Image (tube, rainbow, N blue to C red; front, side, top):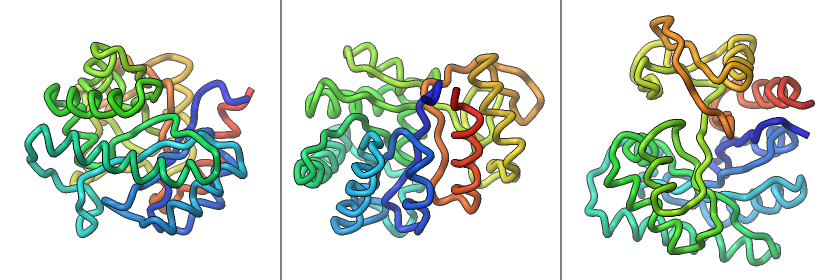
Length: 238
């Protein structure tokens, strides 16, 4: 059994899902807003059910042109509604397999905004709790995403990343900057083990900062996704 949850963003049409699924414990499935569609969601849920992987909703802005990675400023009511609508879409599919949604993870720009903006974090957490208070919200470790969920009485998992680098304030290095992505499997495993065993991470400047890693993310759209998933699974299985 893995000593930490391993999650991967799935249902995004990368072609990696079937190869990655055996090595993870939680799948965050795109709900058609930034990627995927109902057919792909159906096949991804079926794949998760086959491998007994927990099913989550990977909610995002409605922005397929930018893969959900461009920030959009919406009123709180619209953020609430887009989260709820994506949960409804995924639940209609999980019900067909007699499976339940276990967690929710915002995607891309919505994730990053939630991490640093308490208003957005609270809105997302409220939408999740109102839909099903048993759901777990995945958010950037130590961020507003976690704090606002817990203030509402919603269970939250501090998420850390195997394939991304960190800034001194605990935020992820923006993808627009050099060195944002970890490309070497050895470097990824070293970071994962440091986060789990030492509860710290080394930033791009060499500073060692504290971090909580309840769930480790591997990006399914990364070119090393399959290799990283196998390696992280092996390194964290005890």
